Length: 229
Length: 217
Image 1 (cartoon, one colour):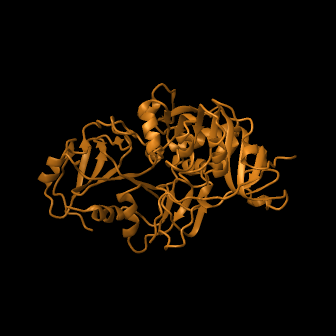
Image 2: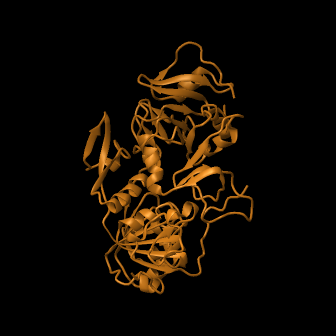
Image 3: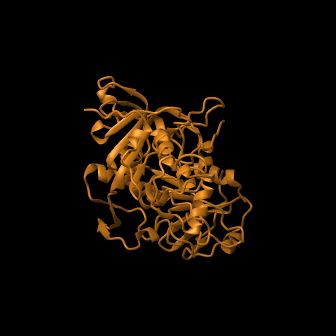
C-alpha cells in the first residue's frame, strides 16, 4: 500500500483536459490550496468543477477562472467572484446552480454506491424543471442523480499513509463527501503521519476512499469575512 | 414602525427553550441578540456546526471556523461539527425546530422567493431551497414593502420561487402575520401602526378578525 506522493504536481498526474473534478471546501475554508496552485500551473483546460463555491477573484477556484481552465461550474453559491460573473455573462463559462443539500447528497450518494436520491429541495421551482417527481406520504420529492467524478481533490487537517483523514472544525464541510465521490481521490493534508498513529475511533473518512495523499506546504488559509466582536 | 432590531426582537419571542434553530443572513442573525432570559437554544450553521457562539475577539479568529455567511465565529460548550451531507440530513429530517430567513416576496399561500432576480447576476440559492423544503416551522423576517413602495406580501410571487407553501409566519416593520389556508392573517400591529396602513401595504389577501393588538416587545 503506497498512496503517498511527493507533492501537488505528482498528485494531479493524469488529470486531463475536459475532465470532471470535485473540489472540497466551503468558501475559502478547507480548500485544497496546493493542488489548485498545481492545476493553475498545469495548462489543463475545459474542466468541469463541482464545488460548493467558486472561490474569490485571487484565491481558490477563482485562480483557475483567471487562467480560463474551467468550462463549467457546478455549485450552490458563486457570489464572491467578479471574474466569474464576467465569464458567465460573456458565455465563456457555463454554470449549474443546485441547492446546497442536493449537492452534498449527490456526492454522498456516489460514495455510498447509490445511483440517485430523492429530495424535496427545489420542488415547485425552476430547479425541478425536467426532473422526475415522486410523491411519498403526501409530499413531493425530486429524483437527483449521483455525481460521476474523474478526480476528487480535498484538504484535510491530518492524514496517514493509508489515506485515513481527520478534518478540523468547519473545514470538514464538503471534503469527505467530495473525497468519497471521486474515481480517483487526492487528499492534501497539513500533517501526514505513518499508518497507525491516528486513533481509529477518531477518523472521519476511511482511507479506502483516498488514492493519493501528501503533506501540503505554505497554507495561507485565507479568511473571507473577518468578523470580530 | 419597527427597525431591523425591532423585527429581530419580536421574532425572538417565537423562539422556545431547547429549540435547534437555523438563522439566515441579515435580520435573522440579529435574533440571537434578543433571546429572552431562560431561553437556551442551539444554533445550526449549515456548513457543519451545531452550537454557534459569538464572533471571536480580535486576534483569536480561526480560518477553520466560520458560519454559513463565511464569517469567523466561535463555538459554545456542547457544540458539534459534521459534514455538509449530515448537516442537510438533519434539516431534511425535520430535526431543526425553527428556520428564520429573509425574503424578497411571500405569497398568500406561503410560497417564498428570495434567491434570484431575472436580469441581475444570480449568485445561487445556497442552502435556502433545502431549508424551506424541509423545515417544520419557517418564519420570514422582511420589510413589508420594497424600495419602490410595492408590497412584498402578494397573491402570487412574481420572482422565481425558492419553495412552495412553506412559510408559516411573517414579521415585518408593520405587522405580525400568519400564513393560513385563507391568506395572510393579521395577528399584531407594530407600535403606532394602524390596521389601515397594514391593509394598504399588503397586496395579497389579508384576514382581519376582531381588534388587532399592538405587539409587545
